[in-house]
Length: 113
Length: 114
Image (tube, rainbow over all chains, first blue to last red):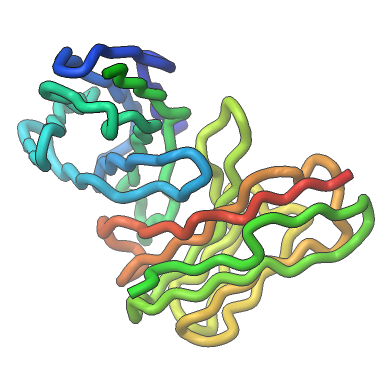
């Protein structure tokens, strides 16, 4: 069964204190791994797609990396506005195609000024 | 450019009442999706529509029906609401089904069933 586990569940950082969020996955053939940001009362906002091990994507203070078993979202010198819940999702490669995204439960990040 | 728009934003129902949640996208996407999000659980797919004229069950379809009204609109109906359906419902769209393109989400409908 396809599974996504995110850790930690919650993370508190001081402004400027860099850290990483983890997304471990088990899937029978990875078609894509997605990172989303979700603010309270809002829908998930797309950040990155990673397709193969070794791939990296960057956007402002965020950098996503991918290995064969996990993905990391590195946050460099975070600011209070980076506070949000970060969701990881994987799409499996299935015979005949698949529309199922398997989501993790998310990591709630709080950045204190 | 609004993206994915969901209405209503909030709703309270009594057990047994019916309700239709509306979703519209203006990105000319072919595929549309309905998810529910519950505390302590990841987003779960209820139904999806790979293209206009088609709909398919997701992971948790029981108690729901959907209609793909046209390319832009995809509605979710609860025929007889139950307290277990209290949740936040998200609609999403994607350019092409069965691809590894990202899905884009609306801001949700918060539904409480008493």
